[in-house]
Structures are given as structure tokens and as C-alpha cells.
Length: 364
Ligand code: NAD
Ligand code: DAU
Image (cartoon, rainbow, N blue to C red; front, side, top):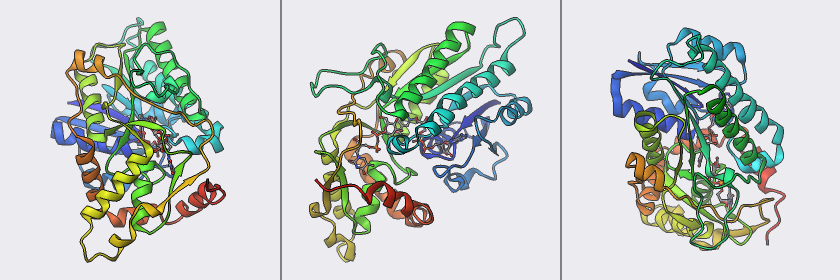
């Protein structure tokens, strides 16, 4: 039985990945989920697997050397899938050091502990061991509006935010371990994900939640920044293919050729919410484009991201399966069916965060 050590499994992509892996491989795998349960980590996301004998949750910080060493000593880990990170650009602008701590030093600790445990003593690593480092397209910086410009695996790194700089730092550490120790790893650089369990600080769930609550929809700057959106399950399938089919030491860009301006996304959410809400629902009439409010731009806001997914398509046969309109509908239905989840994650500190992030933002 293969044992996976997943870090950050209580977050958005990590929890989707754990569901995906159990759906795909059932009881033939074991998953150990290491998560510190920051504001972004929610064990409720994994309620349906928490009692499975093939699943173990360990609450630990990836920066904690003793705790991570212990997990490696207790479990015969075959594959690490490293998601744990501080992931929100706006928060990184307010608290950059935390991003360096978790994303750079935390990754260094994960790499060290894996290397220590997996090393066969003669500098080699036993066959089948693999460390998959889940990273972002933001490390490549910002593209011009030219529709023919894309991020390739060979594009030089040029991060702009403390978040993307810290992820770039973590990628460089993984590269250095591969080059120096022949440490068995892969890196994936993925574009913007959306889908179930995404915390409503990110564009899509924030807009869904605000619209349902009759709050304004804060669009940064001119709303024309472009992101390349991918349904989270397609990302999970890409990681699964990397684990099972990729050559070690390779890096893969993952993206859906689905570039959209932010304002298009917000208008689509409004349309689909109106289509999905019953006519009798009093919220339906209140949801419209008049809720859109242009606000002060994000500092250092990257203009455009667009992934060229040619390599993962060619080498591993991956391509996205979920079209955007279908993915947004599925996502909105998930939030409708899980309104209690949304209420719980937006109670407590969330409104404090919201007021601090948006309260002082000027309308433009
Ligand atoms: P998220 O913020 O939803 O979840 C992060 C998880 O990591 C949470 O469960 C949190 O509790 C945990 N965590 C944070 N600090 C930790 C620490 N010190 N020790 C242990 N656990 C810790 O993030 P996400 O959106 O699911 O992103 C997961 C990974 O994928 C990140 O590495 C991110 O950079 C990358 N990524 C995200 C996207 C996206 O669109 N969301 C796209 C490409 C890549
Ligand atoms: O590209 C991959 C990255 O995508 C991941 O590495 C990050 O972890 C993830 O958070 C995401 O980063 P973005 O900054 O692109 O995502 P976010 O949802 O925060 O913002 C998407 C776009 O929407 C961006 O141009 C900023 C804009 N935006 C965002 C929010 C939260 C708004 O206009 N208003 C908002 O309130």
C-alpha cells in the first residue's frame, strides 16, 4: 500500500486532492495529512474521510523539525504532496514575513526531513520515493496583454508579490535539492483554481458570498487583469499524473487555456447565481451588476497570467475536462448546498479580516 504524506490537506486544493485520491484509489492507499490548521485550514473539509483507517490527521506546523521528523519516522512515506503554504496575495502584502516563514522555511524543513528519512545511506534514494512540490504560475511574474504571450516551464522567474516571491524561493530550494542531491522531486506550477471548499478571501467565493448577502462586489482597479482559471479537480488529476507518470526532476505548468478578465468572472457569477436561484428566492432580484464596485487596486497587481500547458499535455496526456461555465455552475451549486459551511467560515475572525482589507479601500 502506497503512503502519501499530504501537507496542507485541510485547505482548498489539499482537501479536494485527498477526496480525489480516495475516490480514485479507494483503500489501496494511505494518506497522512499534516496541517497546522491556520485560518485557511478546516478539518470539516475532510469530515467524510476522518474515520477511515486509511487516513490519519496530524496537526503540525511544517516548520516544526521535530514534529515532521516524527511523522517520517512513524510512517513509511512513499510520496509527499506538498500543498501547505500561506496562499493569499493580499495577506502577503500585509504580513510578508509570515509568507517567508511558512513557504520558504517550511518547505526547507519538509525537504530536509524527507531527505534525511529517504536517504539510503550511500547518497541514493529508494525507488518510488517522490516529493511533489505544488507551486504557482505567479512565480513567472506578469505577462503583457499580448494574447500570444504565455508562461512556459523555461520562462525566467520574476515574482512581484511577497507571496509569489516566497513561492519562487521554495521552488528554487526544490530545484537545488534535485540538482545537488538528486533528490527525487517534481514541481508543478498551476494557474488560478476554483471549486468547492475555497475560502472566501479569493475572488470567486468572495463574490458568490457577497452577492448572496447583498454586499457590494469589490473589483480591484479597472477589472481587466487576466487570470487563467482551472477547476480544482483538473488540477488534482494533473498532480496524480505527475505522481504516477512523470519522470523525476521534471517541472510542469498546469493551466486551462481559460483566460478571463476579472470583470468577466464577476459578471458570469452574477448571471449564474440568478439562473440557479429559484424565482421565489428574495435574494435573486437583489443580485445584479449594480452591486459591482470598482475599488483601489491591489499593490503591485500582476496584469495577466496565462499558462502554456503543452508539456504536461504532450508528456502525460493531461488536459482540463471541465469547461468554465460548467465549473462555475458546479461551484455555485456546491456553495448553495453548503451554506452552513460558508456561514461557519465567515463567522468569527472573517469579518474582521474583511473590514481590515476592504473597509479602508477607496472606491474609484
Ligand atoms: P489554502 O490557503 O486554501 O490552504 C493552505 C493550507 O495549508 C491550509 O490548510 C493551512 O492550514 C495549511 N498551512 C498553512 N501554513 C501551514 C504551516 N505552517 N504548517 C502546516 N500547514 C499549514 O491554499 P490552497 O489555495 O489550497 O493552495 C495550496 C497550495 O497550492 C499552495 O502551496 C499554493 O501556493 C498552491 N497553489 C494554489 C493555487 C490557487 O489558485 N489556490 C494555484 C496554484 C498553486
Ligand atoms: O495564479 C495562481 C494563484 O492564484 C495562486 O498561486 C494563489 O494562491 C491564489 O490565491 C491565486 O492568486 P490571485 O491573486 O490571482 O487570486 P485572487 O482570487 O486573490 O484574485 C484573482 C484576481 O481578482 C486578481 O486579479 C485580484 C482580483 N480581485 C481579488 C479579490 C479577492 C478583485 O478584483 N477583488 C477581490 O476582492
